[in-house]
Image (cartoon, rainbow, N blue to C red; front, side, top):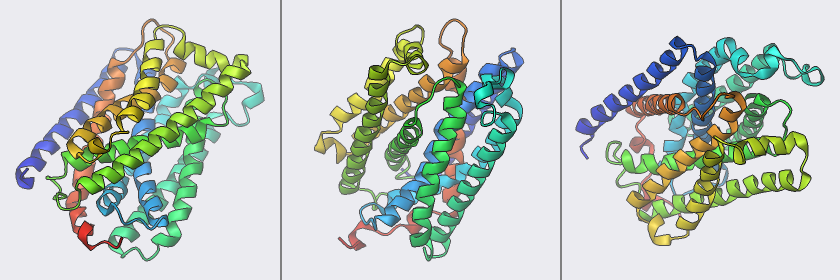
Length: 372
């Protein structure tokens, strides 16, 4: 695909998708569905911010492990940091104008948890945590791309620890607190591992869709595709294992504050079909398909598995967030999905703009020159 001809077309598509998302948000506000508009914003913020930050964490993990197998994937991952400023602004907007409509404990405080679950303290700690982590991510990427990686060996483990801590905090504050009577000590770990899993799927898709546009043909071949496919398989197994570990505790404990959360999602309409499709489609189906070595060596076929995983992981976030907020008839999904397309468009648009300034191909070492 010719880069000069293809890139403007992708930019126009991404801009159109962004406008669709903005229009869906405005339409929800204009039609008296403010709570749903902010709930959809939170859902997509959690999903896409998790992917963007996990991309930088992937580069940090690659550095810590002294990886040599996929330099193009590392560069694609760290270039996801372009979306973090947008995420930071949207987080502030949500906490200032939308949080009071979404979190039930704002209108009905819980005395035993009021010290932790109060909006000023939650907003302050989440904004500070994200500012620190996003700032560290930008410094890490800047050093990696513009300064020859002089400090990346020191920064990478610090970034990975910060990534785990901050996204555990965000999972507790922005997702688990939507149902303040439910708690799970494993949910934070499970949440950011699933975000990393979705990020790997995004790398699979981008490495195929934009390979010609970004001039990555000579950097990503069957061997590199196979390696990334194996990593995707590993995180499918890990995220599915954490899901089962959490589910097993709920099942044998059978405590009211835990099992009611599961019953609403898996055994009551209208959300039960979504939950079961997400569970089998997000973990079991990819696990079986990714056992194939030949499929992992074919980037075009692997891409469709990546698309499937992204849809299932978006649905996974939907299952945890929307049922806690929506109490009306039916399962709201149209506005949420349209805003998801808007986030995806903004994500891709900014990714292309970042690549124009810092071309991934210009910073990637050809596979033939790597040490093995």
